[in-house]
Amino acid sequence: MPPEIMVENLTKRYGGLVALDNLSFQVDHGETLGIIGPNGAGKTTLFDLITGFQRATSGRVLLNGRDISGRSPHRIVQSGMSRTFQIARPFKDLTVLESVLVGLIQGKGRRKGDRARAGLAKEATELLQLVNLTHSSLSLTRNLSQGELKKLELARALSTYPDVLLADEVFSGLSAQETNELSDAIVRVKASRNLTLLMVEHKVSKVVQLANRMLVLDYGKLLSQGTPQEILRDQKVLEAYLGKG
Amino acid sequence: MALRMSRLLVAGIALALALLLIPAVYPDSFTLTILTFANIFAVVAVSWDFFTGFTGRFNFGQALFFGAGAYALGFMNLNLGANPLLAVPLAGAVAVVIGVAFGFPTLRLKGPYFALATLIFPLIAGDLTFSLSSVFGGEHGLYGLTSFSDSFVVQYYGSLLLMLATVLVLLYLTSSRLGLALESIRDDEKAASATGMNVTKYKLTAYMISAFFTGMAGAYQAQLFKFVGPDTFSSTISFEIIAMTIVGGIATIVGPVLGAYLLIIVLDGLGISSDVSVLTYGILLMIIVLVFPGGLLGRLKTNLRGMRIRRLLEEKPDAT
Image 1: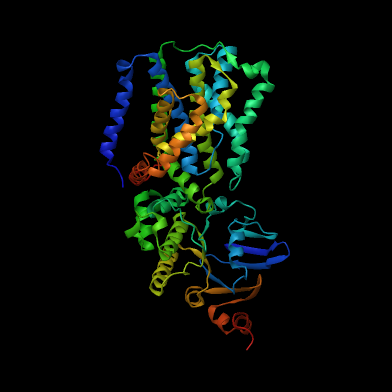
Image 2: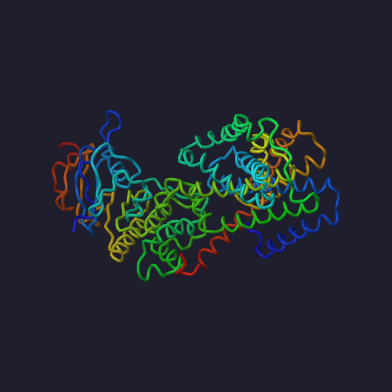
């Protein structure tokens, strides 16, 4: 079986600025890959390239052995990969419930077995329970707090029933308690759906806890990769974050 | 705050009955002609609301569909001897084809560019009627068409039927999955595509549906007048129906009907000449936007939302 995701020599240039420089890595099915790096390292650009929201200058992305580079974002979602946005993008004139219904309806064909037979009501309730938003299901999303928007962002990405989830800083703007709630939710849904997870994260402590492998990006290049323990001891990583001692 | 559903249903039925009974109370040709007009314009305004109110993409060229439908009926009636009543839905279909020709390349444009493009669509189509004047009659238009009836009462009922059917179909569609998808595009196109939605396809679908009903309205007017002229592509139409929709309430489907009735009755009923009509529209529009920011029936949005949520949640699981 090929790795679930293969990124091959991915490069993105904006004029003279190289945002991603010949990046290659792979992710196996069921892995949780944490991606960290200082501001401007190219983490969100990487997610945009993988999910089709931006086009790579060169290089390609394979999902289960199939080249998906150049596909439009909605087709990539239909192939089983969905994402959250770093800055939440709510449907501001829709309610929380409607926001997850949009994805549930679009992702209907992707559910198998019992899931395919469960009604929209049951599916929506389950998703909102998972991220603890049931109490505000009939609120308009423009009335939500920053933390609630982040939870909704995750619920909406999960509503399309992805095999691979790209979570872009889901914990930013959350309180310590909300962070723990949401990371528990991620652990549960990952186990129950056998998800492959890619996380871009600023809260290094959370990634270390959730990921079984990590990538460190710096100036668009792969600085280091390994298990969280290896990364924490890596001198190059410490220098990139803290400067030379 | 939402209005009660059962009360709304009663109000809707009562209004429809009142409109059905009008010819019995006011059988004069003046009243019936104005109301027939109101129905025709209500169809156009409701169709505009369906596309722009729900996808958030401004269409400043709704007259494209109106003129396309009108000329299609004229052409079919004159050259193919088509029955004017049968030709109305066919003309709607022609408007859809014209709509696709203009919408397919432009609906993927981001930002304000689609709105800007729509401004010139009816102008292009209007110019075509001049350059193909042997077929479309140039500035003289097409005349000598046949009406399906010369009775004012029958024409009024025909237009009422067209208006009610349009409202019911579009209410059904907006309270379905399609309506929800369109509103998600209106709110954030990028986020909508992140749910796996082909947003261009959805926008094109809404544009085609909008074209169909507006094309039928144009065709209906053509057989009523027994004449089609280049003014069916005029931007006055495009802007008047926008005013009607904003007065009645955008994204409410029912609101634009009220807007059309109000503006047409105020203008024609009070005998305001067309020279000052645009001015009157502007003043009315400003007053209403200030007093009722969401339009007179803006609160119906909440009812539509409730109706849709209930429908979606009650769906049978195995239905696709």
